[in-house]
Amino acid sequence: MVVLSERAAVRRLHDRLGFGPRPGDLDRGFAETRDRLLGTGPDAGAAATPMPSPGAPPERPGKQDKAAKQAATKQLQAQAAQATLWWLDRMTAADVASVERLTWFWHGHFATSEQKVRSPELMLAQNQAQRDHALGSFTDLARAMVVDPALLLWLDGNSNKAGKPNENLAREFMELFTLGVGHYTEDDVREAARALTGWTAQRDTTTAKLVPKRHDDGEKHILGATGDFAAQSFVDLVLGRPESAPFVAERIWFRLVSSAPPAPDVLNRLVAAYGSRRDIRALLRAITAEPAFRDSATSLVKQPVEWLAGLLRAFGVRPGSLDEKTRAQLPAGLRGLGQVPFLPPSVGGWAAGGAWLTTSAGVARLHLAQLVAAHADLGVVAKASDKAAAIGELLGVDAWSDRTRAALAGVAGDVRQLATVAACAPEYVVSG
Image (cartoon, rainbow, N blue to C red):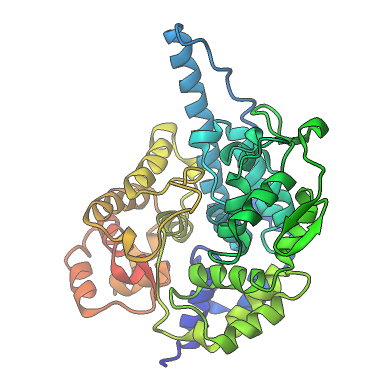
């Protein structure tokens, strides 16, 4: 194993627990940086970027009223764009990006799409719930998610009623959110669906409602246990299974450390840190203490949103400060890359690894990098004698390969073009 240098390990902390370093962030040591990223103090940058209130989604007009239908669609799209741009701005504005990064992780874990929910207000309410518990207790997060209005609409919770249970939420909650494949039976799914009956959500109300007459209050048999399980007691039962803690730890490891699973002894240490409180912050601290976290071989391809948020932070570009036309190009660029916040392709979330390195994605990334570079503060690069080194310092790149350095040398006369090429280089697109 080749161990990263102290500075490279600090950079990795920012990459994996945030969206990459800002200028000056690499001057702190590893322990200080970890404590800062996993701390609990106030964040002035995030606080100064409050969540917008898009309002209730427009009512669906009758099928015959084409003009009203077009107007409603346009209004809904505007609300969705406002939510997306706000979150990108918040990712950029946060002084300590770990809360936003873990909120982003949980968004992918409990993947819910605006395309079906059709209420940016509910998507933002879910986003805030995930933020509130991002580094807290997974118990609290799971309890919030099982009755989250957006998730209920996404997984057909409104169709789940006594006598006619809908199994979608119960199945995905166990398979994708808490236990993993192979740790439950079809009978468990049917019985769990009964436990979740009665919860309903409306697109214009940010809290779900339990309708007693729709809830099955009979005895259920789930995962070897018998009782009158309801939503919260079902969550507690599932999280108490011995398979749950390793599953959660491995999902976080997969996204923040390596596509290779942790060794058995490592996983045991992570589960111990997670503990009976299911402490996400303690789990993250344990992950960063593992030698594998400093292994230079555990590289990860940045997801498009992570790449863009890091670029905006490094270059000092705030989406909220851009003119409306330019600002609108950010989600359009992410769409070209195949990843837009609040629009995961399925309940399984987004892809990982080489899926983001296609030729078409490379073209879209280049155009988006050009857009950000055009508004970047590159004064320090323009004044530098070694511009390749200066742009690397700004982006937090440990070192350029000979091939990349040669490419950068070819555009060194134009700092914005230099910044564009650097942002698309493998050394930045991949978190080494």
